[in-house]
Length: 334
Image (cartoon, rainbow, N blue to C red; front, side, top):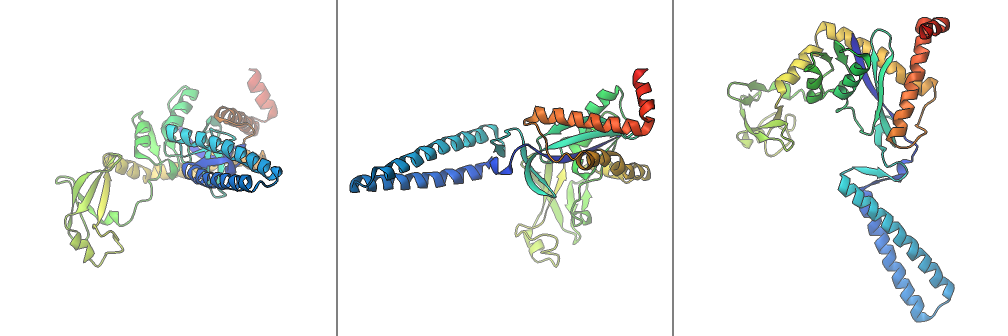
């Protein structure tokens, strides 16, 4: 059997305007400090000129409000620094800034795993990560646990194509059908010499291994003499760097290439053609037919509870289509 995974962004019960980043917090604090200085200067001027008391009262109230706002923003900035979060929404602290074709909004990333045979949602969950790169293995495993057996094939779109994630599923002897991430066509014209560990560019120059990337997941290969690149006719097309061409290679590049070859197999292509009609249908039903544009509950647990109910609603509708109402009632009663 085959399991299909997909995700969709659903708005949180919160406004994007209530989302604070480090940059926004620091800029707001700067402006507040400037205004506080202005108010203090105005207070001194009023006091020296012995002007009307109401103006002093008004400025003191504004000063109090600015200091209160400053304290709140300082707390937000402190939390951002301590948790390494990219942003915090003051209405729903667990939602995140989500990017979609509708733009950016405060929301959650809903995930669903659907079976091939019946098109039922086997597993549904909600995460607060803006992309699907770390979702594949976890949700396939949870779906297998729900089914009580291991699937034979796991399929998803390109957004799930992270070699480490695919490898976690592959190690369970599950065939992975996920298209590779789009890579530069320029790199494909470079030849890798596995015996001597270097790349050869189309012009015949060697790119030597210069060490690991910062995340220690890839080796970086650089041209031995940057003047070769600077004087090359392909400069500005192949690279624009004055340091010369650099090519990265994953530590598990052979595994990535195996997954790419596996995806291109005729059998895998037939499986992938089913993906859209199987796994995108549930989210289409939830958003279009049920009219779910945003979660009602706040917090990750609330969003998880809602997606679970929505998945159940879809499955009931789907089972009525398969069995009919009387057939479903009979199946439930037996």
